[in-house]
Length: 142
Image 1 (cartoon, rainbow, N blue to C red):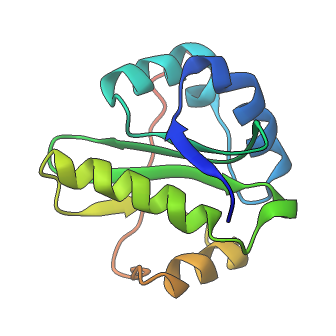
Image 2 (cartoon, helix red, strand yellow):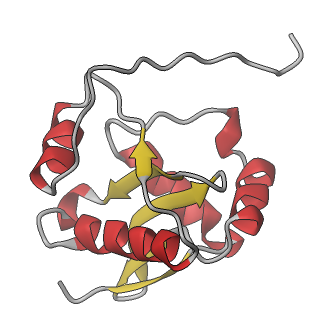
């Protein structure tokens, strides 16, 4: 694999944003602006992480919790660096961070049209649920 994993910091934002934009299946929104992402990282210290190869960010995973359940968001690996175990290493880092604070279950959201992503999660042992639906409500001023 030949990558190093470390916690994400805000100095990584520009490179991380570019990676997300280059990866199909990652849905970005207002919640992914620097101010909101900074607050997320502060609320969940050391949980989100990046993968570095030769000093370049080639993978990222956001991770946090609500006190009961963990959540993974925006797992992305540069398409040129896939199938090398990078995504698995990022997920392992996030799950270990959640375990260390006593979180026993983790969820993620994935677009139903993201076949590659769905296959990845199934392949590493996650159960895709059919009994839940997601509803969203925007609190932004309109």
